[in-house]
Length: 497
Image: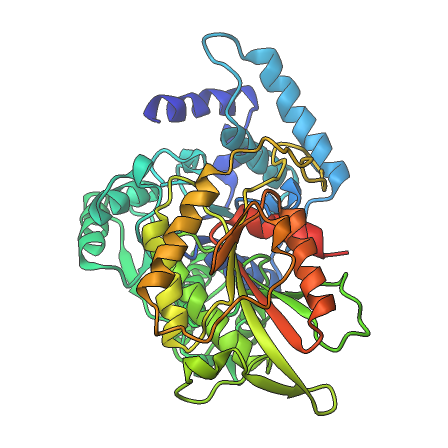
């Protein structure tokens, strides 16, 4: 990683980006959970304050251009292609066996710097892709301010097996005397962050979750209780950036903890991020049918984010009056829970889990966190569906999914199914009454068990769900899609017209 990172500086020379990067006013953000949300809040606040913003995030859900946002909007295809080929052609011309072409993510980070320098943004918000110390975004030598979001266990095969080791990698974005902010962390991680900060004379501050009262009755643009932690960090990053650049006086900086400027409130309330706590109605289902098919999308893929996702889902299905539970739900009556909608007609509801995760993740940790948190809220899944990922992520502007391959390897999906079935067996008695016998059409699946099924492709799953909606007009289906941001992107491609 260190060798590959050092080569980045040669690429900067080839693309003549050293001086442009040194002139950029950059906010650099690392962390395990909430990086994308924090960067999204930060961009939205500063855009609402009148600054021209550049935002680089990863991964993308549908189109690669989502990673490069100018003033909150993904770069247009014409500009993207012009900058892409400018960088690609120069690198192709100047690289050789000694210095080969950059890797995919390295190239995208270089491209981001090129785009933002040419587009003359006032502020550049860079989200770390992986880790921090050796991440491609860390070629930045003098950011204005750095942020580290919540830390947890993820990418351990690269970053280390302890929170201390992971924190050490993330703290790699700290620069000498450059102010940094973080949120409340586990002790092991916080000790390392404080130690790394003191070695570099970094003034490190811990931000508190945003006080809901500061929003003057409005709601955060991003759903979920955990977003108040990210919003608090974003406010600190924005106010410090504005202060250092002469846009916010010291006296006003202190006041922000008690009163948020109107532009900050608007930025927090209007921030939006696809694939994080997002609710989408399937637009292909016949509108004359009174029950709709809803997808609850969240790209959670770590134990902590899985808990946050499950809490959000459990509250969201209540908030949207899709299902109504009493304070202490009786699981045995759950599958007959009735909602009055559409002029007094009665509807039952069924919760379905659609899940996939990378094989480097541990489903024996992720799935129990998800199941237990939902169960604590009285929410039980009628069926869990496991499906492989199918996207073509290397295609520019491609909205197509790869064709279905009958020989596709489903061994990982069978592993996930086995974990789920074992969990359900272990919880027998707690989720009785959540029977799935009335779910027909399972012959479309490759492996159908009592509580779960494996499908060979995502389009098959979506078609199966649509068929169930057409056939069960007294039941409303609510599908939680999680475990992989790529799965979420694939689902969005298929269900949005």
